[in-house]
Image 1 (cartoon, helix red, strand yellow):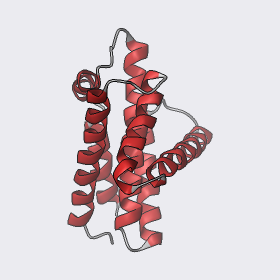
Image 2: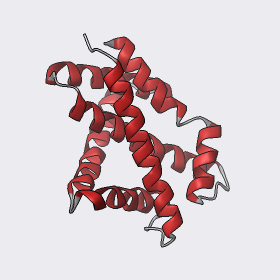
Image 3: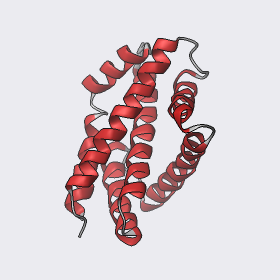
Length: 164
């Protein structure tokens, strides 16, 4: 199980490299003018990709207990690699804040017609990143495409592993 959590963590981590973030910034027409902008993009991509990972695992892994154990390991690994070194209490607070943000994304994906759900999630991400939903349909489409491709990638990974 730890091995699978590490694979998932590696997938999330690969989307958070400077090169990957700069590519996402170009795709989403997000200006990185300083370290604060880069940090904001990092935070939003971390949240989005963690939510996608959790969402896919919860929908694809049949054994609820094993799924939760795997996701707990994943969160611990991601926290250790991508969040400032803090006390144990810091992890608990971070985990709770992530859960509350997942709830917002879950509500977005569940709202309305299934065909429009991806667009609603793209709007939520856009609002989080830019402070408002971008009116540029190309940007929204690229965000939606990122979500769609990433979800497909995570589903494929989940299907390849037997969680023991």
